[in-house]
Length: 429
Picture 1: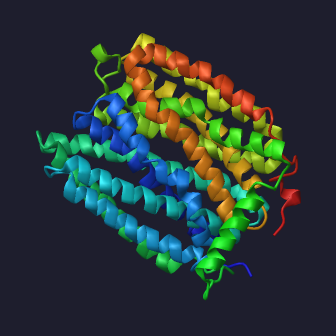
Picture 2: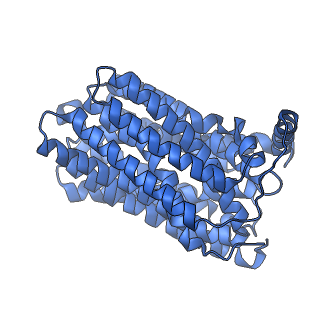
């Protein structure tokens, strides 16, 4: 029996809560560690490791399926995330700032990965096929609003606070993370009252053997959904669809902030917050909305190749920016808007394909496996991106990224999609 609670009451805040810790761990940490004096090689390597929980989360996703309810896991992880934010705030201004913040970033990452499993499972339980396609744009939008908040508002706020408290970078970052802790406690309280209670019952009396058997069955069914040869193509698609973005993502932030003599654009944190964290990400969320609307109208298969072009070809703006090194903020912002709009549009294909492949029994765990593989595809290239950039410089690095766009086209060519998936006339419970 579906809940009468409107999806609009909880999907926006749920996916804001899903996106915020991810952008803090994967992007805000990059800016913070750069300000603390770390090189691009160090930043990419250490923050790359923080992506590990999203990669291995399928290992504990059966527990989310079999123990308690998705709603219980969502609320528990939101409370733990608030604690992790407070932990970073307490340790960033200490002598052991690197060890302390990395510990709490890892706690944040594990909690966020678990929250992702539960939130996505809750989403699939509450909504039918058509509504999943319709709200994929909405959920991606609010996920991206969280990214705008993290990369735009919070980076701008850090810059403003450093003007108010000059020479106190660690203290200003501490204030930022205390604010984040308060935000997450508020989200936890709101969801405690608003989130519906669907037909997702607690599995009381489950034994360790039950969980182990459930894990084996979950894994076996994931790899037997399609013939073995097609499984290989599925895995390659999940791993490599975002390969160019994986190389680009961490170095984009440092490129915009590094001084001109180091090949960067020398943006202030306020300008970075506007151009990359706000204008660029508005393009990202608009791309996500348009992608969701197109897919829900015509199905994913109809728009697959336009989505592939959108997620790859606009990366060329970074080649232009690295050679021209313009100082016009609106020109820079326009370039970032174009690239991010394309990424938002193209990311719709990956999101919907993971939903498509995860249909059936163990949909929560199968979706977690899909997202874990996708994160592995982001994590490994991202960890070496700083090393490559430090060896060749930003200009050659972005040219290499454009060459890697070929990989996305190749892996997409071999996947199979039901032409009817996501269309309104095929929606079902």
